[in-house]
Amino acid sequence: MKSKIYQIAFFLSLFILGSCEKNEQVAQQPFVVSFEKQSIDFSLIHDEREMKMIFSEPAKNDGKVSVKVSPTNASYGVDFSTVPAAGNGVMELPFTKGQSELNFTFKNLIYPFDTDDKSILLEVIAINYVGETSIQGYTTSLVSFQRSLGATLLPEVGGPNEGDQVFVDLSKDFMSKARRDSWDLGFYSGNQFRVTINGSVYMAVKKLEETNIDAVTEASVSAFKPLVAVGTFEQSNMNYVDAPNGDINQTAIAAISANNAENHVYLVNMGYEVGTTAPAPGSVAIAGNPRGWKKIKILRDGDSYVLQYADLNSTTHQQVTIAKNQDYNFTFFSLKTQNIVNVEPQKALWDLSFTVFTNEIAGSGSYGYSDFVVNNLKGGVKGYRVNVSGSVNYNNFGMNNIVESNFSDDQRVIGAEWRDVFNGSAFTDRFYVIKDIDGNYYKIRMLEFLNESGVRGYPKFEYKLVQ
Image (cartoon, rainbow, N blue to C red):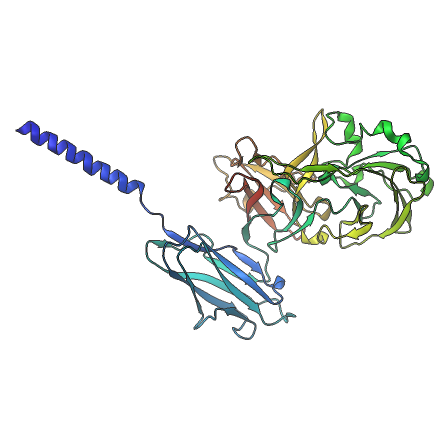
């Protein structure tokens, strides 16, 4: 009899333990609502802006979020307003089952701005929802004229073809982009007379002995074509591309001389169009069809450039004068459209660029990289890498950890060494410090380069102001 009792007790204990284990496995995570951005630049809101709040998971029930609106040196209804309205200083934002985010509208009523001391603090104060909730993450969002405190950004480079170059201004939490095959040559606006080529489409150039552009023909340069290219696995082909470190004095095109007789014709490999095929998940399809060849010669006219360009077999050429613009690093020109094009923002208004890039493999010459990140070295932005150690990590890194002598004169501080293409993940043993031209320090942690379906070309990173 005792044996049967013990058996019953044993099986009952297994049932209880199993039930407890099952309950532990299905324990629900709290439903979290937070702001998409920790801070927003007031100066960028000329009319109105949609504000986004994100959920930790799709809502399983209807609910409501209460957001407190606290202005400083600003008045609701005079300087700004919201949709929905903030009655008694609180916005009530309803949501329905299935939603994974929530939006409301912030309206600026004072553009042009009268002062820059106004700010509005938005704060999640309650989540009315069936089930456990938690107010965490970006629980506040500050609309002000101050520098950005940080954000999590997803630069839209264009998926596995990576057809766009994305430029990021960290202090303003702002991104812009340009089609990477929209330009060919960049004419430097600094003191030197230098011209860059578009490494994002794998362009390459060779200086010829000829100084008369009309005398160059297909036949006279045909022997050079196999050499003047990216990815030939010959160290010597680094002579045909710009220095990857970003040194303006090491462009493939020599400094433009004031003595026009010293300026030679260049053979130009135009690289490749943006790819259009859909590769397997985790892969990229960067290069499309070849863009062909051109010949160019660049002269000086006072403080401006004079560009001569033509097809290889043409006995005449086109000519255009391109002035320097001190607000920008470069003035960009398209040989295809024969026009000046907008690519980079003003040099003081970007810090990082996500782009396809012509880099160097030591001993093997130039090679094309995807998922690349450069800092705006020519605009004065510098950075360095920090390796996570037992005492230093991304979260606890502060002003006292910054080492000024570590800031590099290389634009490839982040480069492509932030991601592991074999495992499809961002490295977690490193992060980066960027110092912008205004003296702001930001720490940057790269998070992803694949989307939820494993498709490449979807970078994601987090940054925070170091204070």
